[in-house]
Length: 253
Image (cartoon, rainbow, N blue to C red; front, top):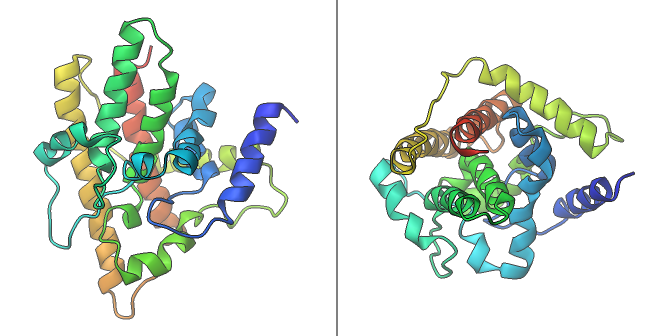
C-alpha cells in the first residue's frame, strides 16, 4: 500500500472513533468522494486536511466548519460575504462556514497569483464545501443535533463491503454522487474575482438554506427523523460536488 493511502486509511479509521462534536461532519471517504465526483481526482486527499488541522488548531479551525443557523432564518448572499473576515477567528461559537469557503478560495487565488503553493487552501475550501451540504452543520447545535449528528456523518458509507478499501469506497461514493449531479442544474461562475465571490455567495446561500430546511424538517417531524436516508444524503453531497465542480472550472489552474 502506498504511504499516502496508508495515511488516509489510518486517518479514516481513527475519525470514526472520536467523540461526536459540532465540528465533525461527513466522514473522510465521503469528503474525498465529493472532490472526486467534482472531477478533481488528483486532489482527493487534500479534502481531509481541514479535519486533521482541527486536531492541533482547535477553535481556530473548528469554527470554519459549521454555521448555527437559527430556526426560521434565511441565509442571504450578503450574510455569506460578511463572514469572510471571520475566517480562522476563534471565539465565534455560532461558526462561519459560509465565509470560510470564500476566504479559503480567495487565499488559493492570491497564493497562486504570487507563485506560492496554493493547493492547501484549495483542499480546505473543498472540505468546507462538503460541510456546506450537511444538514447538521446548518442548524442550531441543540439537543437534537448533539444526539444525532455523529450517526449521520457516515450514512452513505455503511452499506459498503466490510473490508472495502478507502480507495474503493471513495470511488463507489463518487459514482453515486455523480448520478445525482446529473439531475442538478449546471453552475457557471465568473472568472473575475469580484464577480466570482458574489456569484459563489449566492450558490452557498442556496445550498445552506436547503440544508438548514432539511435539518429542521427532520427535527420537527412526528416522530422526529433522526437519520438522513441514503438518497437524501447523496442529493446533499451532489449539491456540494456540483458547486465544487463550478469553482474548479472558474479558478483552478
